[in-house]
Image (cartoon, rainbow, N blue to C red):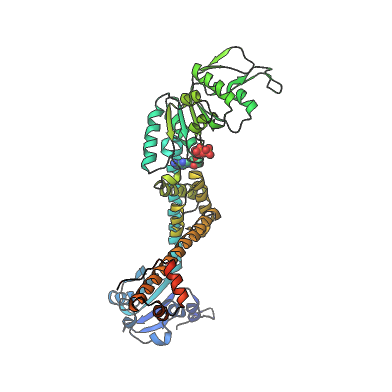
Length: 466
Ligand SMILES: Nc1ncnc2c1ncn2[C@@H]1O[C@H](COP(=O)(O)OP(=O)(O)OP(=O)(O)O)[C@@H](O)[C@H]1O
């Protein structure tokens, strides 16, 4: 190796070339490898002793250096994949003396890691773009906050939403019934948002959470000084606050009977009295009521006024529980996976099939609310974008464990039946073979005679005719 002197200092090129990060290969004009540094050894896994002096084409038939040796023209930054998983960038420069080509030096830079990192970066960018996209889509849906936010695929829900959309255009009272978590609230809001009253208030009264003695003033408001502890100026009730819009009476089944009578009067006359008031207040509202109780049954038992029931139940919407519309489960899982992926900035790439299987077969007593919470939990617990069955809450896993035990019990019963069947067959055969001689049959079967009698009786075996 040539060394250059600079003011008496010999520059150790060999040592420098040995320690740089690029693989260096020099060939002479006979294509023989005359220099091969340690980085090239590492890069290509070929020891110096093996390659030095050999024709480079033996090791790299398509080596760029061969081309450069022919043309005498430098080629720079060409990407090359010498081995599976390796990416290098090669520059090959001819070594010339005048017009004569003496050889070629190639500088190979391993960019495998850089390439990997940039691919990761690209992937991360794609993920962010994906999350931004679904976030945008969901925002659009939420802005409407109408029927677009209701996720379903089942015929049952399709029919229900069809009816709800139709009724939204009218002013009819609506009674929404369904188990807790089936989406009564969601549908009530959607009806309001798609009704001509959409720009007016949607006022919610949760009849189950207001103490009985306050319910009247909550609904109808009160006049100044109506009762101790009341605000001096008096206060408008929910009826007045909903003027022009929709009053949503949630958990109507919890309303006390006495209050039901007052509510009925207000709904029929479209006017009411504030507590302590003497002047009737006129209102223009639409009423939507909801309950998870069986109102029909409550009417039958005298816990709910029949006249109020019919007043509210002009249009009846019964939301089926999730277990009765399993086709909705996958779309709901998908929807909430997207929602919580965005919220938690996590992309889910994989869900263990067992987890999906369990979610599809679970009866969801808490309906969509329960499913939504479970999916949120799964996204939070997911590691490296993977959701596993073990991430499901105990309640669901226990359900399947218990089901497994039941299953085993029935399998055991089957096993008993199989054994009895086999015994019956063996005894019948033995009796046939011995011409119904029970002593001989017992001997043949290797059991005491008493056991044979017992088995014949319990398995209801008569003496077979041959
Ligand atoms: N079809 C659906 N699509 C999307 N989300 C739904 C659907 N049904 C219910 N949800 C969601 O499930 C949760 C519970 O729904 P909601 O509060 O409307 O139920 P509910 O029947 O009013 O329950 P409760 O009787 O306990 O008040 C909400 O977060 C709601 O957004």
